[in-house]
Amino acid sequence: MCIPSFILRLIEYAEEHGIDYRNSSIKRIIGIGEGLRDQNFELNSLGKKIKEKWDVDLFATYSSTEMSATFSECEYGCGGHHHPELLIVEIIGEDDLPVPEGEVGEVVITTLGVEGMPLLRFRTGDMACIHPEPCQCGRQTFRISPIVGRKNHMIKYKGTTLYPPAMIEVLTNANYVENYYITISTNETTETDDVTITVGLRQEPDFDVIKDLKDRFRAKIRVAPQIVIAPVDDIRKVNFPAMSRKPVTFIDNRKH
Ligand SMILES: [Zn+2]
Image (cartoon, rainbow, N blue to C red; front, side, top):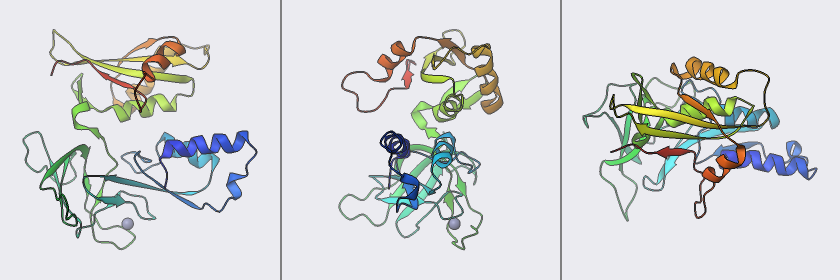
């Protein structure tokens, strides 16, 4: 079991030290803490990068300490299977009521297998949808989609609803992008959100980077945020502030 981005670090280390990881005894890896697939169940850019280097079987999961259970995908890789003996799952909308089946909403769980600190209708803050149709593996339980994003990171932008993971996916796919951070602020005039992405470049390409990135955003998420190019070192300072365990790529300056 491994955090997927750490698999890439392992591969890098193995290549630097001449370790033949492809012929190791590792045949399958269960990814935890990070997604490996997009909403169409295709491998996301992280999953693809791992697979290009290392032909292991990758399994995506979704879990949290609070729920003391895991939604794990089967060999068909089309969402994490629900364990009805461990959890009651509801997907709720802005009005706190269940959304129609297949629509994205907040995952709410009630634990059935936890004795010490059971939870009743616990709001996870994670946004996902349910895939109820039977799975090819023969299991009858529904499957939960890859996590679309965190509820409090939801962005209202130019008439659409966005979440950072979809934007990060676009940035990860552009191989000339070295690093980046996303800033969200409130537009005083329209009372909606403004999105600016600050990007550091691996090398200076001989084409219009801002135009290329905007095209990529429009193709993937239908809208293009504002893009600013900045020195890689400046962005690194934002990504890795002192005392932070996780890299910072999302800055929320909205008035809540
Ligand atoms: Zn299945």
